[in-house]
Image (tube, rainbow, N blue to C red; front, side):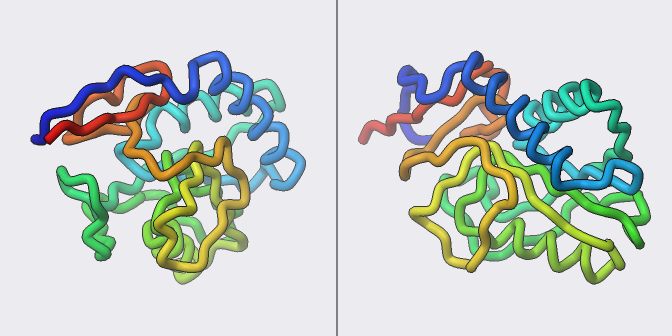
Length: 180
């Protein structure tokens, strides 16, 4: 692991909470709640997904929830370019309106792969919701249907996002500064 520090908060927990509620309002306006299956892409999405689900309760929406573990980063800071399924979902998505929830949209490969996978399994519709949208490294044409915050080309941690599986517990999004 490279020498680093995590001191600069880019998005605080109050801004995150406010944006989660706004995203849920937009999701409810665009989605039928009766066939909704929410799929969190692990591990980074777990905090974001939990807060989205708690906020959906305000609208009396009761989705089925499942998780998909994918890998393209390993313990590094750069995507390998290859997306592989580590742990698959158990929910049958045939005829369902699927909402994919991920922590960050970066290259676009993970969400493009997952959207195609769910459509191939018979989902009626597939939408995506991301906490952070980093467009600097987009290598696949993909835009999230719902995005929390645009983010500059920084490596960030917190609120589920990690560096070498550390810092997921932070209640905010912080910039990682690497030292040589």
